[in-house]
Length: 359
Image 1: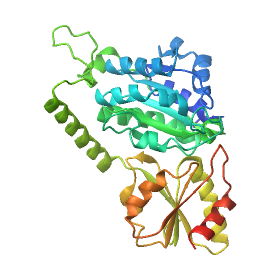
Image 2 (image 1 turned 180 degrees about the vertical axis):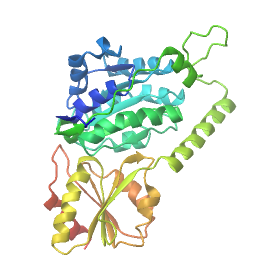
Image 3 (image 1 turned 135 degrees about the horizontal axis):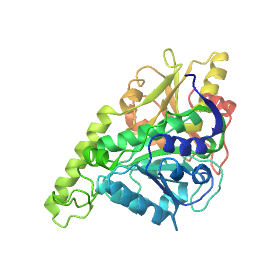
């Protein structure tokens, strides 16, 4: 059977992929520029076909706590929002991590701080990769650079979340959420039966098996020595994720003398900048982190002895650049180039930044 190619927005792709990957429940609250996720789900009405629950909560705080409740039963549940809304979810996200619950959060970033602008941004990098909420926890963070990846990463995020019993986030930006491209949606995967959920998630609080001890889902532990052991277990899990789940893409890097590091829509623009630079005789390459956490530290460090300098290109004041600098450990100069307030740079701007900052 030939693949069915559709034209849709990145936000719409998230919604259709969620239905097709067997998602059990979506709980959210509208905010630009991600509102089409919920709007698409409401239009398609998956509760009539797959039984998927779709609910507009009273607020972002309500929605993330509904996700906590659904995840505690072993179900595939998710939410989506944009930057200020995700800020409101931080306590609930920390609770999810502390209770080791798999769930999917989608953040289609807009400019800030505060209410900011509805225009695109990448300034939630710190909020996502450094934990955001309280406590020593991590989110598995995927950064799509196309509408196709918006669709593909839904299933991948759920797989990783359940594999490691850890919340995962798709960190997109307003450009990727709103742009339209051709996309091949994933094949339909039926929702798991209650019996399959119990078999795959023996830790879940389903309330179905009365013969066993009831599972208690909580992130609370009043004994310091036990809480320390919990945290040590978390850190061991994060180490395992760092060893096994790093994803990145290298473009024109084999002979590069200068290296761009960029994610999301910035990476798309940087790819064109590389083509322009090479036409001018500048050997420019691009490394695109696909997982913002775990970060491709070793891959970037490997270029420290190969290139003359690196430029971290981001729609923010300089956030990922800190991780790039940590990766190279002073072996090569690392500069930052970004635009703020919802302004998106052009490929020519990036080439000029390479000439003025690196050469």
